[in-house]
Length: 570
Image (cartoon, rainbow, N blue to C red; front, side, top):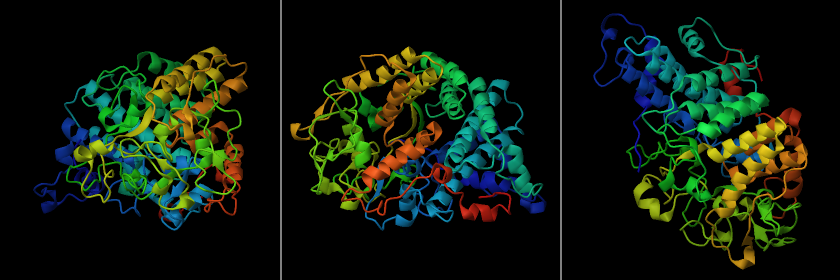
């Protein structure tokens, strides 16, 4: 069990109290309420900063979101379901208006989930700006402490704007002055007609240059967290040379905020095990908590529905697709199968035209996906019947589920199923991703041998990692490192992109990767062409078509356009 403070009172003061009138009795602070004077200290600013970290999961009970299932910080909806890794899940009607259009890339500006995500992201931006506004008024603080607090706030502001940028592309950038001017009425609104990448890069570079290596808590951002995020953003902006320099420094010297050097865990599955939260592979994570009298609101609320309906018990959302699971097939040498998309699948589920695959599979499959006859952590043997409705497919998500043995220490009794509302951290960046990002920068810089070595570090860990018990009837675990260096940039790029899918599957990255690589049209239409004709598939009938010109970014919520007084355009 992990606890964290309540942030609601702090942010109410931050959002509305700092700009209120200040005459007569209104100067007197009510007992038990924090005002600007109370917060205008190093300790007070730090409390406000914690409230900015709290929005990393995309949830706050006071934001009046429409359920918050679309605002989750894991990006399971927009990156995972939107990237072809998973079906919506549950039954066709449950959350259908919000989620099905995302899977089909037919969402409109009135989609409620998209509006929730916008509100959550810009709430995070607002909270970082409040930190900077108050920090500017604090006296008696050392330069080092000031840089640290500012660096953490700007790290978070970069993160939140980054999420907005990759989701909608044309979004406004808000710094502390713009926020203050909006609050005072000095300006009426902020347009979305400028590219905000330069602003985001400026913020994250400041964090990288000014944050210390060591912090007083493992969940805070330090120099190396900032370096990893800086490198990722540089890949998105295609500054590969700078990305290579920054990411190489993170790989060589990076450590977490309490001084533990980054590295790969021996066992892949430890990254999704509550017992090993904040391990050496955790570069940046939302610090979830439970059993803290917050009715599970401090847990990873956005992924609360993403557990199989039977077994641990859940709502049965976020069910891996056949197209995704097929990628985990391997050949006799433990390398990715050349042509995995066929009718021999990992669980035919009694569907006409499909047969059982019993060849080799990557070890990461069974720590990512629940599938028939294979143990589901310590909850028992997963069965196809665990799914809530066959229209979701026969598979279940696995990375966001606690072990049955951990229920007593972390399950929040306010949640109706045994594995929900837990304190399992939400991984936002892992060290394996840093290795693969550096490999990508090396490929783009012409260093194929370096990329080969880095990708093989990740594959070697997969080969040596703990393996689930897999019956022979459904396959044999066999994954190995590459033995032949890449012959060309194309070969290296193909290997790198597949490795990100295998290593980071169902962690919210896929759709955004496809867009930044410029292959969203090819990959998404290949997914639709394979998946839509399958007998079980209801949500993709009639078969959608993905048009990069229209579908690379999600539509800006109409409600936000209306509230912007005409400054924000579709």
